[in-house]
Structures are given as C-alpha cells and as structure tokens.
Length: 433
Ligand code: PGA
Ligand code: ZN
Image 1 (tube, rainbow, N blue to C red):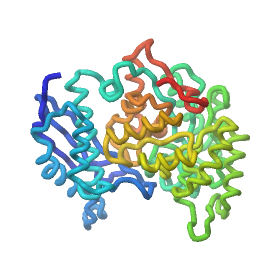
Image 2 (cartoon, rainbow, N blue to C red; image 1 turned 180 degrees about the horizontal axis):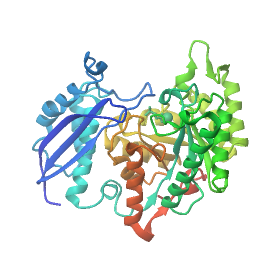
Image 3 (cartoon, helix red, strand yellow; image 1 turned 90 degrees about the vertical axis):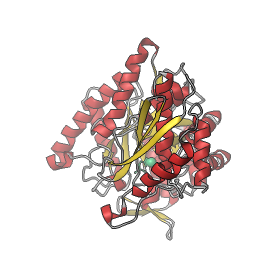
Image 4 (tube, protein in one colour; image 1 turned 120 degrees about the horizontal axis):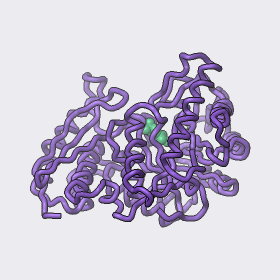
C-alpha cells in the first residue's frame, strides 16, 4: 500500500432503524473514500462508553449535531495530514484528544464513527475485504447466528421481562444452510403466533422478532420448540435456544429481587428457573442472567451451566470493557462475552477485548445494537475475530438482514474454504477460528 495521509473527514447526522439520529462518517485518503455508520442501544449497560446526544428540544434531545461538529472540527484538525497505515495509532490519538475515561468529551459515537471509517478505508487501500484487513488473510470461519425471533423487554410493547429469545442453528455444516433453515422456522413461528394469538401479534419488535402477548418465558420457549419441530427440524440436533435476559432491566435493587412473569423472584429462584431452561428446554446460551454488578451470581450460574453444556454470556456485565473482563476472568463469572463496538468506542479496543477473551478460553459473540443502520461492519468483524457467534436480530428488517446478507456474501467469496462455527459456540475448550 502506498503511504497515504488522511485528506478529509466528514460526518453527517443520519437516521437509525428506530428513527433516532446517529452518525455517518466518511474519510478520504489517496483518492479513496470509505464511510461507516454508528449503531445505538436501548438497554444500555451502566458502564458503556458515553454516547453524546445534544439534549436540546429538537428531536427530544436525541440529536447528534454536537458529535458531528466534534468530528468535523476537533477530530478533523487532529487527524487530517496523519498517515493512515496504523489504525491502533489513530485510535490512540482519538482517545488522547478526548482525554476522558469514558469518551464523554468528544462522544464515543463520534470516536467510533471515525475509527470504523478508518478501518474500512484501510481495507479499500489494501484492496482486500474488511474481514481480511482486520483479521488477516487466513480468516475463513463464519459465526453461528443467534437469531432474536421473540422480542420482549425494552425492545417490544409486550410485557415479557426477558428481552430476547434466540434461535440457534448450531447443527448445520454451512452458514447459508443454517440461515435458510432459520428462515423456515421463522415463517412457521409466524404461523403459530397468528393461529394462537391473532394476526395483530405477527408485527415485529425493534430487532425483527415477533412480540406475542406472552409473559411466561416457558411459553415463549414452547413456541420456539414447536416452530422448529413443525418445520421438520430437530431440537438439539439442528437447533438450540438462547435467552438474553438483560436482567438489569427487571431488577429491583432496593428489594434485591427480579420481577419475572409479574412475580418477584429471589436470586436463588431465578437461578432455578435458568437451570430448568437449560435442563428441560434446550437453552444453551443465557446472556446477562443477573444484574450488571453481580459478578458472584454470574460465576455460580456459569459453573452450573458448564456442567450442562451451556454458556453464560456477559453483555451489560462487561460492556466490551477490558477492565471489567479482567474482573470477570478473575471471578470466573462468564464462559462467553458479547462484543459491541459502541460499548467501548474504538475498533482496536474491541479487538483487544476479543483477544483477552480468547486467551482465557471464552466464547465470543459479536453483536448489533437494537438501533442499527445498514452498515454491515459487524459481519466482517465477526469473521475477522473468528468469533463463534453473531447476534444480529431476526431474519427480517434490512438493518438486520444486511449483516446476514454480508455473511452470505463472505461465505460465497470464500467458497470451499469457508467453515461454519456451528457447535463451536458451546463446545468446551478453545476453538480454532
Ligand atoms: P441493546 O440490546 O442494543 O438495546 O442494548 C442488545 C442487547 O442487550 O444485547
Ligand atoms: Zn444483551
């Protein structure tokens, strides 16, 4: 690659999938331009990097004009003329001009938009796909998708406490086979919901999953089970299930209790409930089972789940933050990590978080946010990191399907070299990406 310096950086306020403003950033060097867009969560962890919003009357305070200005003025001034060969160095510069521990001065959304656009531009300049630019030219494993087909919590208008019920097509030999089988199950699930609750409940939540009027998690799991078997597939052999409890959202800190299915549950009662899900309902993945400060209860359920062949994932617990991951490793709180770029705010810190997870034998699931854009960056990131899983919603709504479509494209480009993570997602021991 010739030596290239950044010539121009331009940010723009655009819409995310919920109609909220977010950022698109384009960067120019050596006559090439690359752009990236920033996602935004709804059930955010307390320890996430700071998302800068205007807080003014316009758009209910959600505008990102200050973040746009920070990019077009402060970041432009610092980076134009800088050589673009080293993403890590650019990320370091961004962090140092911000100068705060949680990126609250420039906004993690502003910093991330630039970091992602630089990564894309590097792949353009190298003339190789983004996954190869980020992860190396030997990358070839496609992640197991965890498709969020029943939405609850903060992502839907129903009264289900748990946020996500995930369909996991672990028993296929190719990513594309896994996706098309999941699509069949998604169609059947829609038919079942229509028949049971009425057509009105086949409209979808923020991540493309259905939001039936169900409060009992066992009923939601039964729907998944029936959808798989009625589609002609086998539970356990072909599909398993996952739950993102996102439990900080239904935890009452004062009482030390969780509100599930309109009942107050103690930690022990909730633990028991998870235990039955794993033992009797083919649940192999549970994310954020306890609230985001309870490393101890996470550790207990992680050890229990391990015996039963299931994994416990930290999302709000860890917020893609390496210091929180170090604590979780010390306390053996998780067997898997969720990876979200905008929780930490730069591509290189995200990669470092993933590396620490691999060294400690933890599974990795790259994730979208509930507020997404058409940017497919995370599909390439999952292949680059060799992550065992990817969570990017139901097989519906373009901001979700764009990621699946990009993975189908990568699989097709790799041809017979492509492999599929499948059961690696919960197989014990580390797996080769
Ligand atoms: P969020 O939800 O993007 O609204 O935070 C996703 C998740 O909790 O995994
Ligand atoms: Zn989550």
